[in-house]
Amino acid sequence: MMKLSWIGPMTYIVGIIIALLAGFVAPQNAAIMLVLGILGILVALLNVTDKELMLFLVSSLVFIMGGSSLSSLITGLNLPAGASSGLVGALNYLVVFVAPGAALIALIALYKLSKD
Image 1 (cartoon, rainbow, N blue to C red):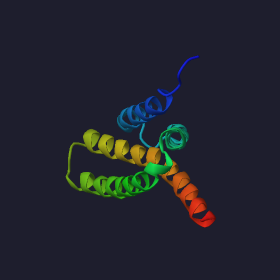
Image 2: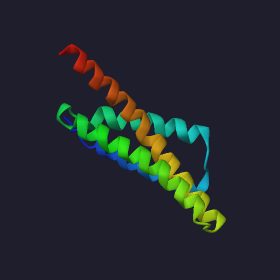
Image 3: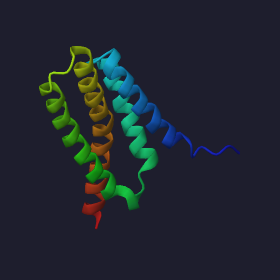
Image 4: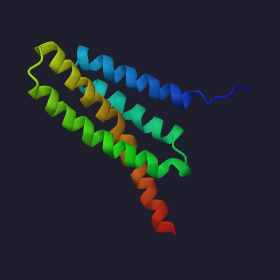
């Protein structure tokens, strides 16, 4: 029987690569956002264990807030237009990739808390 333990980490790597490349090629594309959102949910479901729940939530929250703040900073740096929009697009896509998984894991954590 084939082991499928590689699917979770590979989903994470694919999501990161898509987010980074798409930020420079196709910023603000709804189809890419949908794909990244679905991949983010899959990453959360396949990779986050009960033991890692809180670490994942804290890391996701910090990344979402930091990514949004960095977008503002990059915009204010007066970089060349292509570089600035590409970096901001990549950061925005990374946030889109992380946020749905974080929301799902937060709901799971709330459910587990309510059971106790």
